Image 1 (tube, rainbow, N blue to C red):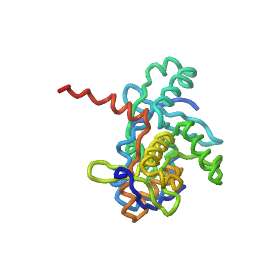
Image 2 (cartoon, rainbow, N blue to C red; image 1 turned 60 degrees about the horizontal axis):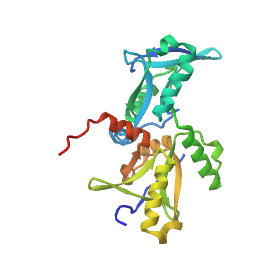
Image 3 (cartoon, rainbow, N blue to C red; image 1 turned 60 degrees about the vertical axis):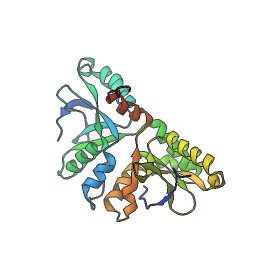
Image 4 (cartoon, one colour; image 1 turned 120 degrees about the vertical axis):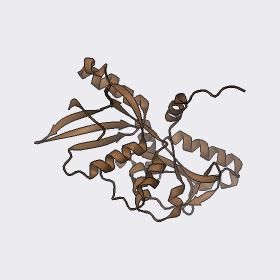
Length: 254
């Protein structure tokens, strides 16, 4: 099958409301490779946060013993971001919540905010990226069935179709190149495997879905010298793809 081939790559597995201007992932390792390479990989994935009309982030502050911790939330799922707004914020302060909107930013922008925040000493701000619960549950199920401690997984899951033997992954074409898809949804990874199995039924038993943590992938992009890491492609969820398409005007019919 021409659309799907093997590719080897080494991966690291792994309060009250106020506002903040543009000024979880806070424990990322120090950057080793050019940051532009990481940003390029993350650029096409939207995440969703809450802002006021000025574009300032909603900050949830709470006291932890004697220290105040300010948390800015970003969501993999637009529905989860809207649910947080419609649930907790509207319940606690409906007047304020009526002025808040769900705003998309790229995963790359989130990453750059975290990197800049990590440079500040005692900033007191935590940037939190919230995964879709259904996908975390799917990741835990896969890990548990493979003999790993799935219940201890608390990261942002990515699902990677791969071959059981060796360190080889299925790839997909993008333009004139081939890339290794890392999916935010298990269902997308399953669909790719099913297509491969129909085309190569004799290799069906040698395939599986691997669960990796987004933070571990970013650490790998930062630290690995393996050129194959540049072929990692983060595939947005179907919900995010539909959102991106909604922003693009319909092409005129010919």
